[in-house]
Length: 617
Image 1: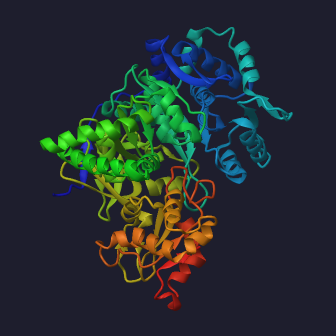
Image 2: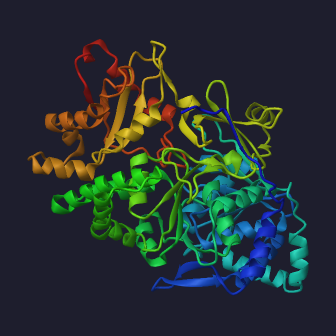
Image 3: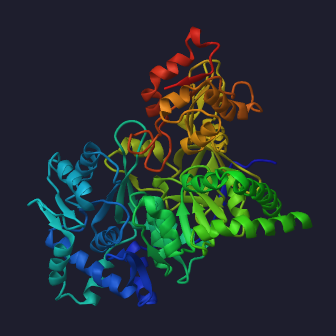
């Protein structure tokens, strides 16, 4: 199939602000539930209507005035997803204060850097852990921001303000302000005003502040709305971090179209909360779908055989349907049986009402996409970056091409540079990197093209396929280029492999760092009489090593010789956001991983290791 180097989706997108989006939704959906939250000892879902939402936002706006914040200043939010996060954000937007989201897993040093760089005057924080982190970070700032805790702490420090008390002051402040006056002041925002500064989680150096305007985000909401129809009949569970632009932009879209937004108790309760909330639209990252998929395949005995049979049937059926063909009669019959025995239970596990998933942040394994499609849970894979607000491409319910991230969204142009890098131009491209003119000029050329740093290709129908990160491409000492992500995605198809990283830049061959799925591996080992009391000892067992070698290197023998890893190291510890080996969007920080395991990696290439394949950290 011939490839294209340019694709565009011309559209006359309206210009507007996030304030316009909010106030229009309030007018249209008044008594309809805007948010639902778990409240009280029984953790009942309690609704907040659009009309009541506006009243709360007015109180937040008044609280910001009490704190002395003015239009053009900034406020940070250091919190997990919760209603107060959204209220603080909308309060800032309506008063012209830019929001600076900070991911809750960052360290005190990282938080202090963002506060200093952005000049945030206030930090909204959740719970005692984040509040103490905020206090410690503020103590390192030259301008000493105020700390506001969303929660009433048992032993409150004197320098911490409390959300409920502050909102009461805000309520008193706006008591003499009519709703019409408040709206007029909120509408003073213009499309070109700054809405937010988001700090990217770069793999090296200090994070860069991405400046997004109201127009950037508003245009992306409008473009996304043309790809995915949302109505007041929809509901969602918002669990990806609101500190990342993906969930945040989607929530702007959903709230603006009347969808009811609920938040989970925590990241650990998402599956249970899905059953309670029963959403119709959910956005997630590939890691979430992988856990569901491999969790289903991990079943043992007759149940496991049934799931794996359903997987085979479903993938075959989905391949036919997605290619525009009608499955053969027997295949259609088998899929209906698989649906009754397996797929329906997976849908019920997620609340039973999901009509569509949206996936972003990293490539999704095509086999997983087909499995979910067969289960009646289509995944719309898309693409974008913080710097593009974020969506540039997405598959739509009517046109899903597995293995791609879809065509450009409305108003967007995509160009493939001579070296394969993906370039984007459109109204969603950021204004600048905050206080970094040289970095901005390097990222956006004179014609408005943003250089994404990703490598990809456009097929004959203008569907974009991401092949790898430009900086992640591995060049062996023999001069051969290797894209690690496709290899890593293939490895994760094994139910014995939880995480995998390909390494070997400027080395004579590529190798693997593998974190096993210890639940699956330990079950397998027990059946063969291998002790699982100690993970380090488990990974040193010859039988386990031979098995994991086959599960990793053995599954890649159809690749070219330079792509096949020659060594594999089995790691006890998962890569995580907390330990700095994953970005905030679950992408591997390849350089950090390589530095952390440098001595282990060096052992791969020592002369005495020539005849050895498996290593243990």
